[in-house]
Image (cartoon, rainbow, N blue to C red; front, side, top):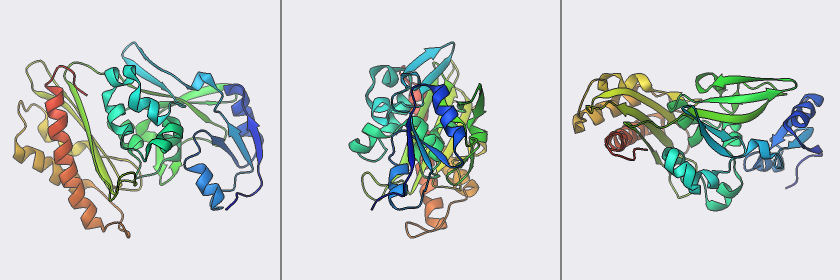
Length: 293
């Protein structure tokens, strides 16, 4: 299948990209193209203008600065998975990136593209919510920050304006005592997740839990912030099997999953309970180790 006719601009700078986006009524950004191009070929997406940002070096790279990790929006999934600096300073990103599709997809797909596409079953949006990250977006002559909690407005819908370009992703830098894990269920390797749960927690110098963040994919119309389910763990110095299973029950109760051919609502809630219990066990152990996650 072939897409409808469209105009094409290869942007040479962020400014050129935002000007081009503002120049057409139905313009779209072309980054990795792993979601947009198939939609165009199926004629489910019909942009009048594609703005190619693949040559913008300013949107690539990874750095740590003043307690914040900054990822360029054009960081490929494969980069997140394999880059030694990312694996050392942001190991949870490497763990999650490895879960995305197949290597060919990860070679092209981008961090910013995944967030802007806002698929409710995608892993990276849920991870950003769990980490309380934010994105920086540029428009003609200005830029603004959007917290993850405000970014995702609905299935495949974000708070970005049509003329805005997502340029940077920021998350808090890893601290001693931090631990994170992501658990998901897929029917076949490389498939979209039926459900997934991210757990990020922090333990103080005495081993007591100070903070628990929980988010899910495939459990609602957007990546769901389920952190309230873990509030009962604060102050605890050990994680029992019963506590892990209780977190799972609370996550399942708070989830609002869809029901479809891949699984009923009740089935996804059962998955959420098992996945949350697994993720919190691994996150807790990592928070008590030297490397964390």
